[in-house]
Length: 130
Image (cartoon, rainbow, N blue to C red; front, side, top):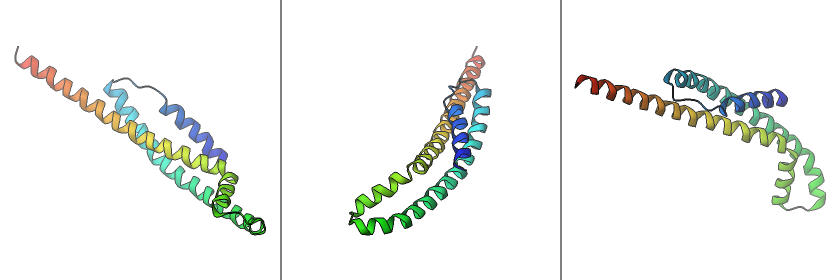
């Protein structure tokens, strides 16, 4: 499951790194894609957190017997468990950032469309006075 999520993250990451023009048709198309990716990354984030929390729980149970014999501080215990689950935590963080990037890029698309709409309105207004 992790490998599938990583592959999908790589595909979404590639899409998000594409620079778009300010052409309204392209922006609308990209906005539609971004809305889909935003929904998908939301589900992916939930799945990644489930995997992470499951692994963390398993590792904590396994580590408790080891830790109880070693007299480690709570902070050290948490750091140990986090290091054991670092791949899962990385995936959670990555998907969270992909989701946030989709949101920001969708907001940017809205701004570009509003700008283009206003420019069109102003250019049509200028023609009326000629």
